[in-house]
Length: 188
Image 1 (tube, one colour):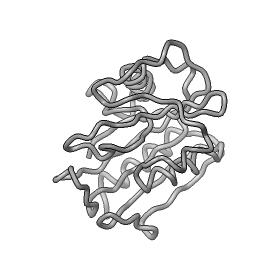
Image 2 (spheres, rainbow, N blue to C red):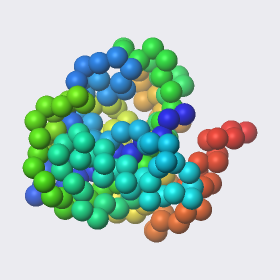
Image 3 (cartoon, rainbow, N blue to C red):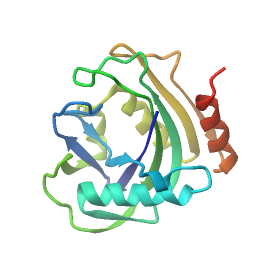
């Protein structure tokens, strides 16, 4: 399993997205996705939640040139890729992703980089851009203002609706992440 953060920055009815480059071993190759990336080793562990925040800010800045101001942890998603087929990712792995959101930022949007091109997309157009099927669910989960934990699962190229779910909580509690995480580290 790999661990990552993504950031949902929405400002003035627009959402910051990346138009990802086409490349091998990238689940979002050629698609639109939120900025984000893998956690560094020092950003992992249940005793280091600040590491997730640092990752979200760093990855967003590296990919887009923007610095998130006061991002908030909104949820955690397990992207269950065991049965998923990607056209350019031969050995997919599961990703546990910490989802942050922010409304404020500083800096200037940069041009195309190693990951792709950062773009502001009108919120009403987000459903229309090419993206992974599970991402559409995630955007819906973000519209609910509560903290969430969810699983997005595919069978082949199709979203597995029976294996995909979300739970909402009125407020964040570290025990939510601990129990969610342990359920997937030690499946019964």
